[in-house]
Image 1 (cartoon, helix red, strand yellow):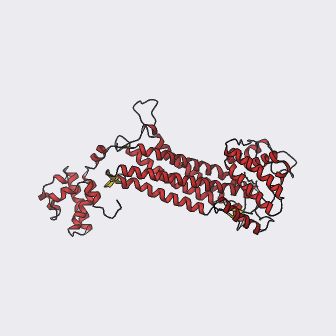
Image 2 (tube, protein in one colour; image 1 turned 180 degrees about the vertical axis):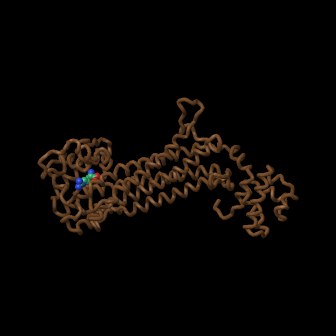
Image 3 (tube, protein in one colour; image 1 turned 30 degrees about the horizontal axis):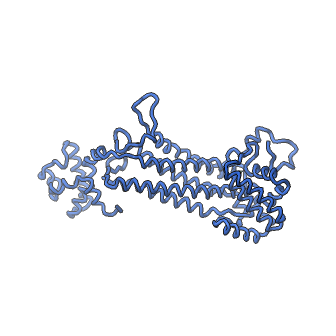
Length: 447
Ligand code: ARG
């Protein structure tokens, strides 16, 4: 086992099973670059506070910068025997620069380091996800533009409802994504990197030193995330920022799952509205004819995992007394997992949507169903001053008659139509069974 950041008060070695059980390096290595940056900031503060000399500060910074370079060029190999990434970086620094590294941990604890690193991970990954969302929104726009003249049956309760423009339908997902992206950015706005919590009680370094350093570093790095901690106890205890991100990612997952479900249904033989590109489907080992929408099914399926990750952190946190408890180490795997999943899904969906083929014939066959125009018939009567409820009743009876007598409304003679309402004029009525007329008559919506 690698050297630990603690041990002085122990007379026995940690049980090997406990070593294995308690370590987090196997996943928190992903925080390496954020941890190094946090240490660079901390070294600066220590030098300003006079807790290390300028020379020591320089040596530490140079050592950390070398590690930073290794991370950037993918040469960084984490020590799987280290307890966690904070320990690993400290050990690596000691190897590189010797005794000067022993002062770096002055006035800090892994409890504040881990918050700093995890918040920075969220800010970076969150910004990346927002970019990917924008890209996918652009692809949705392209798809909508390419198919702007397609009309399809709209459904409620999975039953034919009213014709809608495909453009309108698919853009609904763009609006969801817009809110998703706003939700993420608003969570990120709350995510500053507070300095000076120590383990929980604060540190002996003057707030003024942190204030100045925070300002300098923010200016230098061009982002406003650094700040002096307002409440050190809150800072090391808080994981609501993880919950917020996981919740935003779960909502994205929910939206993707619904989109996947729509496309899965539309690509069945029964619907046949769309065809998903071969590159996004898989076959069957037994049935040679099969082309299965597995990618979409997995997008739908992973939503369960995204929700699970959110619930897991919520449940882990609910009974914890302030401040840091080791349970909180378990926030990372769910956070990383959901982040990676959503990134992959965004990249896949942005490609998948480009290859969707629309089968107009199949769609237009469905649009022949007269029931889709029943609401338009109500509006026809409403325009002729029949109260809506009465009109609803009249059309209901007309539809019932049509179904029971197996006769299309279009085919009914005017004399029959007039039995339901004397306002009906056949040559006007027949024009209403037209998807374009129906869609165009909805003037309240953006087109
Ligand atoms: N690996 C730990 C985590 O992720 C670091 C914090 C350990 N702190 C402690 N006081 N034992 O939470």
